Figure 1 (spheres, rainbow, N blue to C red):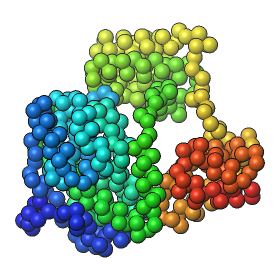
Figure 2: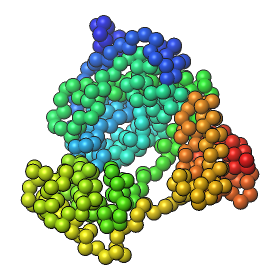
Figure 3: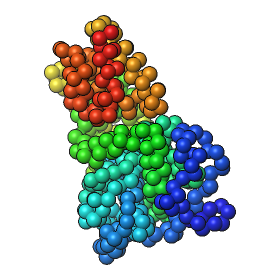
Figure 4: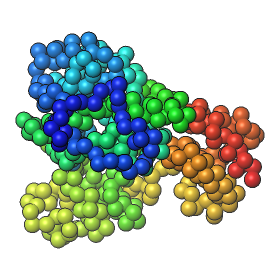
Length: 427
């Protein structure tokens, strides 16, 4: 590994972290971080052929210990969240950079490493795109989640590597277009370094969690991540259009829906990010103004001079479809509720439930602060809301524990918060 002082000595799994930093979660570096400039074996060639992939599969099957895994997407450039580069590192196998466009089926690689622990940072971001190419871990360690449980104030990979291991990662290429081919060497260097110290970070965090008495909590969280099924498609995704809070009338909502759907079809066909086809701000402007012609549409922000006549006509056609809908066909204001109403309305709808929620939030916040972890990691806010809105008819610790378990709370969470919530509900 190349450092600024010219040394090529690499950190190893047996010496994962400066002890002072590992014992100071969320603290500032006790000494200047050492810039990490090169992977210890240099930048590996990109795997883009069946023969090269077979060599990597054999190497990782023969490797030892956990497997560091990362993936790069092209968010903001391409449609969807597919992986455009997969990085792996394992002791005895080194680092591999795989092009999943050229090698779209990595299920065999996933199989030969499935029994090993996978180490990821922010696993929920990468697991969906890894699943698409046949890679699913049976057990994992999420270094971001571990950092949250350990009480670190900053849990990005760069901050964690610096605070825990004392090395500075260069993070300048995180938002580049990873669908670019060929990938430039500086990007490949950045990608390889993302898995360079991931196992070392995992080892240091395991030690820290053990010293804090939180390691079993983390293991339960990691097991739940590994066992979770792929997320179901979101219902009415158009309702997440940025700026929707400005849209008040049902006819305007219909315009948002029609424009969003038209944009999504075009983006999917062209394999580009929807935002590059039409901005959310432009969709909202059209909804608020309900233009009656493409000329009126062209006068709105986001539909300016750079947009051709055919493009204007296709967007106006979407607006016209919304304008022509019968009243019964218009979308309802607000997404259909699948749980309690927004807490801001509780005081009017059910003052007793509002009081329960206030007491429960206070109790959970105090407990989370005492444990030095984010409140949402102690128990999800949605679970607390559901419990406070409609608590069990017979309020006991057993009934509340059963309710929490049914909402997906892990055993460690149930054990810690059940007495707090019972007390809050009774008060």
